[in-house]
Image 1 (cartoon, rainbow, N blue to C red):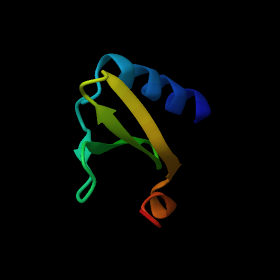
Image 2: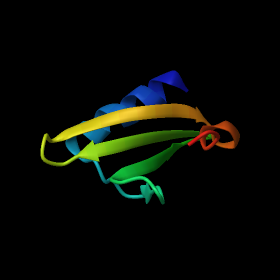
Image 3: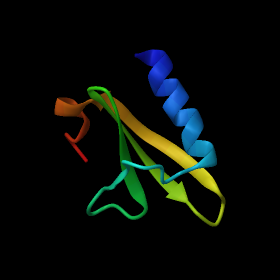
Amino acid sequence: MRERVEERIGELSSDPLPRGVAKLFGLKDAYRVRVGDYRILYRVYWKERMVVVFRIAPRKRVYREL
């Protein structure tokens, strides 16, 4: 699973809004992408052309304390 998550994060650097991505409500320029049972939450800083991952966790835990 770790390899799949790392691969997906690498893909975000070239395409920050891939197919299947969902916008997170209440957070500016924040998105979520699914990798199996895991979710990767990240922000896109368009001016800086930067993607920052701020949480990786299983679906049932990832949205707590947002």
